[in-house]
Amino acid sequence: MANVIEQRACIEFYFRNEISATKASETLQKAFKDDCLSKTTVFDWYKKFKDGRESVIDDLRSGRPSTSINDQDIDNGRELVLGDRRLTIRDIIEQVPI
View (spheres, rainbow, N blue to C red):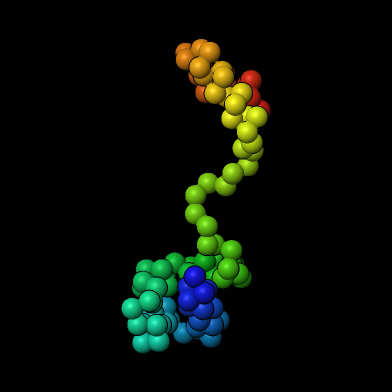
């Protein structure tokens, strides 16, 4: 993971110094060999920096964030479904505040 962050920092450096994404990708390939980010990833990060992104760290997780999961809500939802399997998602949402 540290290797990925180092490469992202390098990409940001190249971007800020107006070095092309292609040249940045080639330089990273020389430096990191088999552990190098793909050319597509380098171009994606250039776009992110162009759009105003400033951090290279906080994009390491994937998936939808968990916002309101707790054991009580899970149990309530399970009881509703097991009690009446014809409930729609809207019905469950109205009864279990998620």
